[in-house]
Length: 257
Image (cartoon, rainbow, N blue to C red; front, side):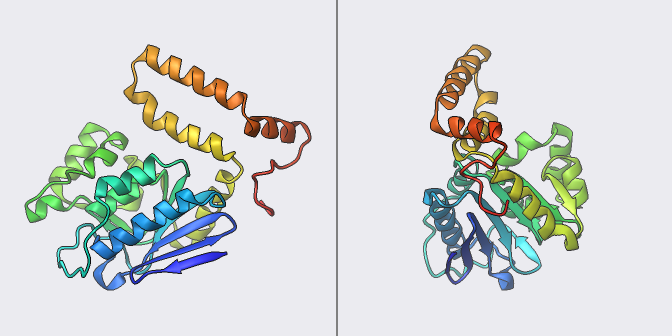
């Protein structure tokens, strides 16, 4: 077990799971420079740590993240941009699970949507509220629009209304909403399934989801064929197949899973 706590972001690793907790509830976990830097540092640290298999992003307090810090009281300069945070989450090799235990607006919705799998407490509300203050959900559109039908995106972006977690799941913005009492159980079940996958295989699976839609058909087949061959020829596949034949857990599966 290892942990590191900054003023506004907590970082803890237990049994191969790095949990990054936004912890500035008095400011609704808004994206101040301190929160941005703590989140970016946590994501980098988890990505670089070979012992970390899954990253969980969550919050302390009633808000997951209120988006931009409109109060502007930061004492330091941000070292990461919002697109850089999204890239660390989506283009990084490790699964990122959102344990969304508080309300999300603006950039907070972007963070929830950027997680590979987002589980949301059913009493949470999410909203693209930017138009209400005379701006638009610009950068977060890059991570949110691939999950939404055009009609749903237009209604959500233009109205500025907050929606219940269950509706956010219906339109695909998050994976699912569960009762608050079941949130930790559901997140643990998701993480338990993810750690059974090989680290290289999980990284490859993520790359497929983000890369293939942007490729021409012939390019997609050529790239995926090369990827498939490299995986089948790797040590991880050899271990996984041996474990399957021998009816045992693969070497990368943590004890007790």
